[in-house]
Length: 258
Length: 317
Ligand SMILES: [Fe+2]
Ligand SMILES: [Fe+2]
Ligand SMILES: [Fe+2]
Image 1 (tube, each protein chain N blue to C red):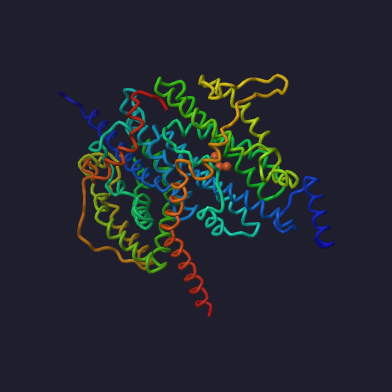
Image 2: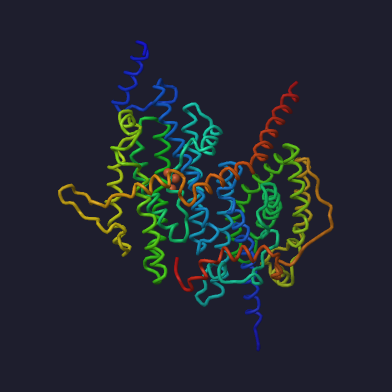
């Protein structure tokens, strides 16, 4: 078989857009689980907003991936008709929502990451991805303000809130590393000016996290553990359950429109 | 009643008769205040408890578009709860007190939310029928005599019509979809039609709060009139979907200019209100659990705010 370079890079691009869609969908789904479960009504609303932003992003990335794929594919095919091993989100996004501290720490990690990632994606040689990033970057500014504020309030709040935050930091720390480790596919796209080189973001990410945690009187974890594999479809056990729930209705009625 | 109170009450009633709004700082009879607190807080609780049956399907919505729409709908309902708690707070009760009353069973919420959402079709039926019934009621409450309540109704109604549309759209997709989807739509209509009619409350002749509420213009239209409006508007909507009307005895009455319908099963109505619905316990327990799990967050927020205030004071000293 003779696959041209162009076909190869097209496949890379579809996969990259799908990955970014997966990150957004899985996280948005997790945050949406807070509906009616927030610590007070204002938080039900605020978390709902954040979840909506992420689901909106997922739709944009998937729609683009579907357009590139052709064959009449739609965003829903990407969300509902793929298996655990096909999903390529970072593991951090799929972990169960945990308590409010866990959710806030995860948001802090991801919001700081996205506040560095999206401005770079805005300058991507691929104008579709750049356009999605331009919309998302504004949302992320608001998300980041929220997750920083909450981190400080909870870190510097009561003894209990401080401990819960410190525990969440410890529980989540090992999942951050893979975000800064582009694989071969991403490296090929980085070389073409399409993908963001996340390896370059780590130093600044750590500096910003450290600054926020210092203000919050929290300690930056030093633990050495690191779990990897999301981009290659090696997931935690949690993703399968999430997909079971999310895809249940859609797959029970093949071909139905909603 | 003293001479003074008597003239205050006369002035109050005059205002109402002249379609002027009563505002938080105005004098009002104690019974008016109590009646309003009961009604507004019950309305707020309904918005909040209503997050649960619909939230039950956010994670399973069958398309991404539906997921986003439902999520934003549920989020709106939380927002409605917020406006309404604020409106009730202007009457001298705190949100914490209202939540407490809900959790110990002293305050009610709309009994419709004690019905379970078993299928995706139920999300369509709820948006279409339950929000539809709520709109009938709320449109009339835009003219209620208490200013903050009337204004919150105006805000809320704007969003409610989007809710009804999204519900009807779900039904429309199902009704014109596969045989199985159409069955799902019919089943949801059958289960939610009667409970939606019950949302308007007992017949006027049986309603405990009606007469005084009408005189004070807290309520502007009676339970039965609002229900009739809803019954009438729903008939062509069911026809357009191509579904069967759940009320087999429904008949156009030329003389009245309205549809005549079967009697509601009031036994079921009181049965569910009195705690025998599928979800009564679950709804309150869910609310209590979320509230208790959030206690440390609220404590932390208060502690942090106190620290900030203290630090600012120390910086000045
Ligand atoms: Fe509402
Ligand atoms: Fe309402
Ligand atoms: Fe609504």
